[in-house]
Image (cartoon, rainbow, N blue to C red; front, side):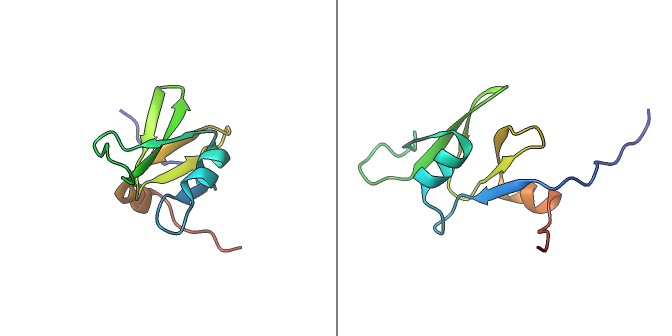
Length: 90
């Protein structure tokens, strides 16, 4: 078995938190804002559904949405994002 290192690639990402507007994030990634399936009351948390090659994936509050190297979008849990990516200075 051989070992491989992930290439250093810059990506675009948005953190789905209180500083972002779900509708703007959904527009950016081509997703849909829908009520959280576990909180079916008025004013409950919102999630963004994203169509991916693996099917529909859900970005929940606190998740990151990543635009991949081929223009694809997918959600990423905050702990995985922190372990995988670092900010790039402009």
